[in-house]
Amino acid sequence: MERESFEDVEVAELLNKHYVSIKVDREERPDVDHLYMTICQAMTGHGGWPLTAIMTPERKPFFTGTYFPKQQKHGRIGIMEILSQLNDKWNNEQDHVVSVSENIVERTKKQTLIELEGDVDGTILDKAFEGYVNMFDLQHGGFGKAPKFPTSHNLSFLLRYASVKNNPQALSMVEKTLDNMHRGGMYDHVGFGFSRYSTDERWLVPHFEKMLYDNALLAITYTEAYQVTGKEKYATIADQIFSYVLRDMTGAEGGFYCAEDADSEGEEGKFYVWTPEEVIEVLGIEEGELINRIYDITDKGNFEEANIPNLLKHSIEDYAESTEIPLEQLQATVNRSLQKLFDHREARIHPYKDDKILTSWNGLMIAAFAIAARAFDKTDYADAAERATDFVMSRLRREDGRLLARYRDGESAYLGYIDDYAFMVWALIELYETTFNTTYLEQALELNKQMVDLFWDQEKGGFFFYGHDAEQLFTRMKETYDGAIPSGNSVAAMNLIRLARMTGDSAIEELFDKQVKACSGAIERYPSGHSIMLIALLHAYEPSREIVIAGALGDTKQQQLVAEIRSKFLPNTVLMINPDGDLGLEARKLMPVIADKTTVDGQPAVYICENYACQTPITELEQLGKALMAPA
Image (cartoon, rainbow, N blue to C red; front, side, top):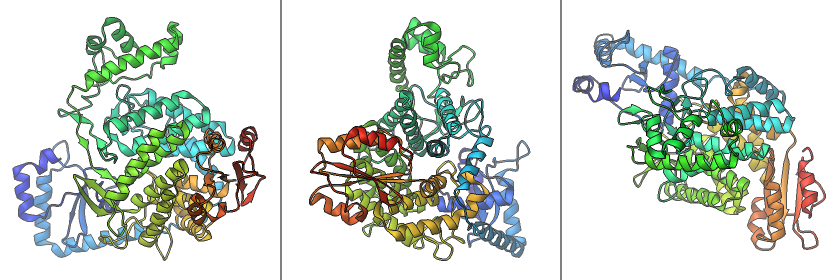
């Protein structure tokens, strides 16, 4: 629409003569996007981007839609006709237009303030699971029909549900989806990282755009799947995602970029597709034909006469078995070949990189790196998380500590939204549990308090999307639904229950209870649309653990105990350290619950507490391993 309409002289002249044109970056102003998208969906029955809204000077809309060509075609009205007709309406029937806009605003206010309150209990977790079962694609994995989005936070809930409820079906659903998403063309087998979604049910043909948030959330889920199953393939995929992010999506100062476009040279996917001849030209006949067979690169093609590399016909393991090539040898050949193809592909014209740095999406990627640093014992992942955190906390905060939403080319702008706060608090909690640096926990508590002060609905509970100090639109919305990105309300709830258990602060736990009550009506109506909130409810309603390790930081025995804990998938668990001496003063101040957890006969000790009651301290690795495997 930008090319067809807004860059066209005729359209521009008509717009400039009768309208004030405002172009909004929906990633910089998600508050505007959420509100007017809700109106578009209510008025037209559907939404999408580009979003077109025509409003009175008071910002009250009376016409909305999505894509419009310049002139009418294929039964779709053109923007020139729309602009002319609406200008006539405004000049000749202005009272009616204003009345229409007022009605739209009032209906929207009622819709956005629908009673979200209610009461849920532990049974909502089983209802959600049944919802996922009903939507699950038994053949290809994932939920629903095309287009298919990864929505990996649904899978993260199912991993926890499988673990807590000992439900093998939930785990099977996760593995089926993770395996097929990776084998399909939605995964970039040459350069790594996932595209935004699949246009078909099989995960073969993606919309080639790569988003930071998808790759952060998917990296978390693949990491957790490795912890649950012990299968190295999931660790490998997570590592590859992180390699892509560090190579292509990380700024010089450590912040993470937003996205890479689908198009290059005006064609979607051109950067990513191959012909058999090109592969053979790069690799030679023997190696090239092998890669063409494995990755289904054919003369016929699978995408506009070219090929998206994929493993849907067979995995590398299956191919090795069918050809009796030793798997280790085949994998080494494939890795070497893919590196050659990557080097060749680098010479192509790259898709445009959106180098905005968003606080919220950086929070998700910091959390992913911190979680993986623990699971894989990789200090470089912890370093990446810390660098990005330092960037956000130094470049995306005002002098008074208020978070900002966007950084680009040296400029930080836009007051942070609930997502910015909730996602960064999540990141800081994960970073504390990775490094045991109390600075991160202190920052998490500070931002959490700011979040409550700025966004909390004092009347009904829950968090508004933008702060009371921000530009006030005609209504303040609350987002609870976990779509492509989890909602700020859901992540805030997950943070609150974890911070409450870490600090023992009853006021934080009371806030969590109010938060759940404020959103329970929405959760009850669509449980499986609130996966991160369900993770928070699992933590609250199912048995949970607080684990405290007492002992000197850096002590070999203490490090062994930490490693044993981190080798397990332990949902509904928070991990804290009570260091000896002065180093522990700040920790005990922030987390009073650890104060009485001390070493035993000078030896590091682990305290496993459930429902605020602690077992006898453990000092031996074997004993710890058995205790961790016991049901919570």
